Amino acid sequence: MVTNSPPARHSAAAASWQQQLAEAIRDPVQLLAELGLEPALLGDAAAVARAQAQFPLRVPRAFVARMRRGDPRDPLLRQVLPLALEQAAVPGFGGDPLGEAAARRAPGLLQKYAGRALLMTTSACAVHCRYCFRRDHDYAQDQASGESGRWEQALARVAADPSIEELILSGGDPLSLGNARLAELVHRVQDMGHVKRLRLHTRTPIVLPARVDQGLLTLLSGAAAQVLVVVHANHAAEIDAEVAGALAALRGTGATLLNQSVLLAGVNDATEALAELSLRLFEAGTLPYYLHLLDPVGGVAHFDVSEARARQLLRELNARLPGYLVPRLVREIAGRPGKTPVSSS
Image 1 (tube, rainbow, N blue to C red):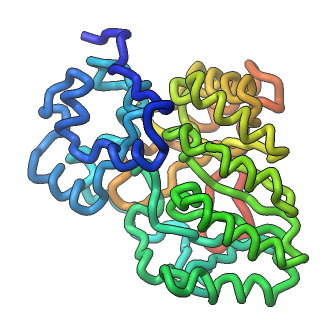
Image 2 (image 1 turned 30 degrees about the vertical axis):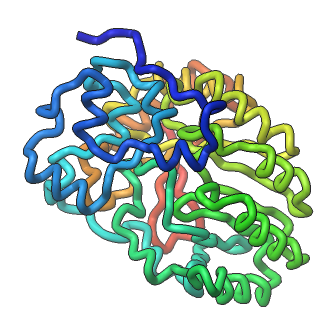
């Protein structure tokens, strides 16, 4: 039976974001127990153990607090819970679906598109999303340097290429870095006069809003480059008052806030869910940007939504919302010079 009472909310004021991250739940059985659910929901225990070994559960309690207690279909729970289904071999789903190995220009540096480059700042994330297209990524090749080198080869490559006007900080999640390391990176990029825009791709303000602390806000406010923060929310239930406050604080630095989502079966593959997400984002000062079709990495096929269904959802969203609230439906195809739009027709 579904109840509307969530688990006790973890107070961001009571603990630093680092402490909250250290207290993240890592045991699927514990997560289910805290939500009043039975372990049988996971499926075959041996298969779940393999899934957990390959890509461990990690979810901050601040995110768990937004899940509906007693509801095995809660859209936030579905995004993070390891299942036996992940062990199914499905044709067309495998490693490196976006061809990132071919786009590597230096350890930790990818360049797929003209004028932009992506720096893998870290392998760490505040949450492990089960549909992650880098869940099998070999981050050992991208230790741009590790602790000692600090992105040396990657930054040298960016500094030597005046055509790179935008640097995307990704990972992992760049906000998994502490403010001191992040400041070091930002300051080094700012010394490259040709880098006009700095873009942070991050899910952390959504799953761990306490990360948006004064040190981060001061850093972003003082950045010489134009800053864009691209957050990642898939469902309106992810955006509570604390998250909205974190987004408002980020916007207060002068950063442009955009959101990108992934279309996920059982999470947001309904017009009502997508419309409510766009409205909630806009109320929080964040513009819906991209709605991605699922990247076909191994272990995620149970999240797949057909392109025909995606087109139908896009038509319905266009009929319901003003154009600025309808995210661009796209698919990323390895080797293409940009995201491939998927039209409603």
